[in-house]
Length: 231
Figure 1 (cartoon, one colour):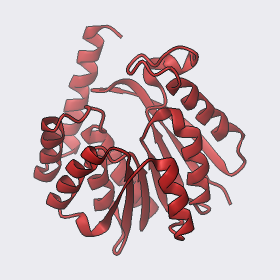
Figure 2 (cartoon, rainbow, N blue to C red):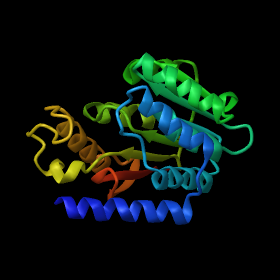
Figure 3 (spheres, one colour):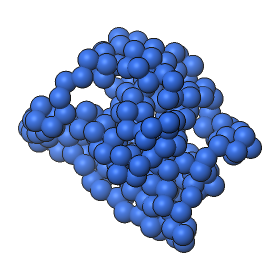
Figure 4 (tube, rainbow, N blue to C red):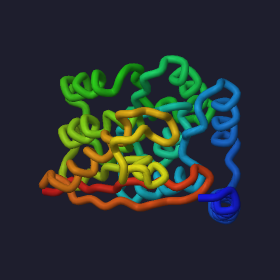
């Protein structure tokens, strides 16, 4: 998309957020502090955060698993959507990111509802299973894309019939159509292949029913996958 198109997408994003997502001091501060700490600008947008909140509320979620905390912005949205007594378990591989996230989550008043695990998700997920964590009502996958197939398999093991699984960043400017090429945003040669294998698993695994939605906005042309675990 050319520069004019991106400017239009961003303007529409701002309009939607101004109309439907009121300014929130804690969320705004989480964005500012994440930027000041040098975290990559890859968190969900405000209107996408509201979407996560709505999906969690529709689900009546009491147990939520998030893979990829970053600065805790999406974590706050999910924690605020919990049913009474609920809990978010969020996993972040980078200790520095986790430190920023802890402060942001605490300032938002969500610390008591959030358990932040620091470590690589493919190492933390077996630990959660061994501890008897779950089943989770909603799982948000927003970590390194090359490992999405493994994240999906562990998500299914930590699910129940009716669990909602959301995978972010599954379009990548349309580059998923050419998975052998490096990702256009990161240069990662394995990323797109991992996302395409994620699609293949969603398509072939009888335990899930799924679709994917393309999105445009401040983050460019991307999308998310939405799946539900079958009985």
